[in-house]
Length: 315
Image 1 (tube, rainbow, N blue to C red):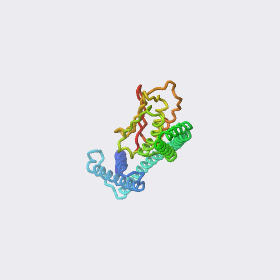
Image 2 (image 1 turned 120 degrees about the horizontal axis):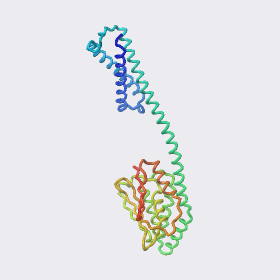
Image 3 (image 1 turned 90 degrees about the vertical axis):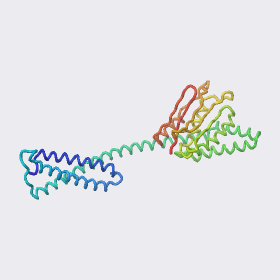
Image 4 (image 1 turned 45 degrees about the vertical axis):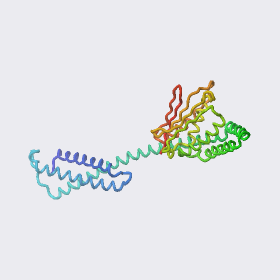
């Protein structure tokens, strides 16, 4: 025999460790997902030659120093025994490669199954949230109070200032056009949302006068970034709904960008004597939409003086 049982075990363990080492190196260099056939061929070749190298190296050590390591001196090996040994090594390398490949494919199959299930859940949630946002936009379009209030303001403006009445009509049309065109979209640029906001605030300020003040300070470098459509309108509507609006003590709403690629919407808290009924659907929809669109979360902070929302800007 070429080697005894203990030497056989040593050879097997060394070849196994070498094969696993080669597998780890190849995982960093050649992905199974990108080039599976190439990876399989290279892995078989590398592990086979690796096993041969280990065998030759250990055999050399064995024959040179064997007499010092064991009682019986190694005997010469014939050609047939050498061929059998090489074939055994190749088969061992192929078996290790097959086990590694099978383990990888099994793990990836499990991961793919889980990801597919998660994708289906997220897709269903995305459709539901998109439908709710679209419904929210539709409600605004059909809200009789919204329409009546703005038409009342328009009729007064036409009598007082025809140019201002014309401007009010133009902005009223812009608001509706934006809602019709963008309510089904997942994302719009911040510039588009701010253009819509400009028209929307024109209607509010002409309807409510000095009872609310808006301060907007957006870094121009952020304008090409994206947010879900109608986000700002929902937040402003939320601020107006849950706070008093008085000329003596106007509601202040600030909209600005920060260095963390976030859009910050903050308003002073002026509690109503009688709290307005709220389902919380508007804010919840925005939070849920961001959970599907980005890894970053919407931040909501509230203290005695201010209510602040930070929404991530998506690149």
